Image (cartoon, rainbow, N blue to C red; front, side, top):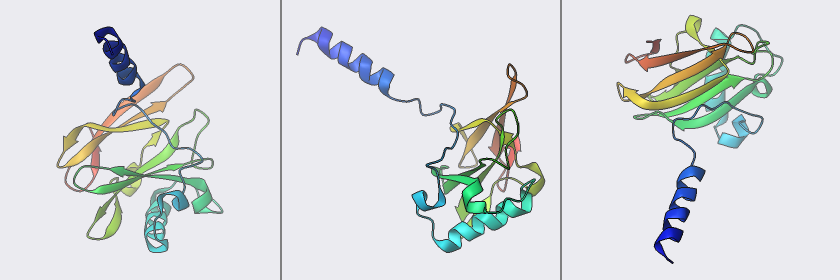
Length: 158
């Protein structure tokens, strides 16, 4: 293989690789069953969400989208509403949980769970936990970006 072919192949592979810190949102394939949580773990998460959700769906497991993530020092789960816990501009209530002392704990105080269209973890890390950035749409043309940093117990807006 000549040098120009190697350069071209390297460029294609570089462009095709998704950015680690690109904005994400959860979809229909992000379910409790898909991530393999035990019934006890799923119940811990649902109970925490119930304390802070601004509405109550008929079926929490159908309403919530979930995805396993690496937070840094701890395994994590991102949870997002899908219908009832979403607004007209596409923003949905979004939680981050971390596993600590063998229990799933929300990284947001009950009254401060953000409403977001998309999110990303990192690239920054504070207190061993990746920073959490959200984008919230306020209209079709405008949005707000907020980054949260871990204070040792919760994420706090910075």
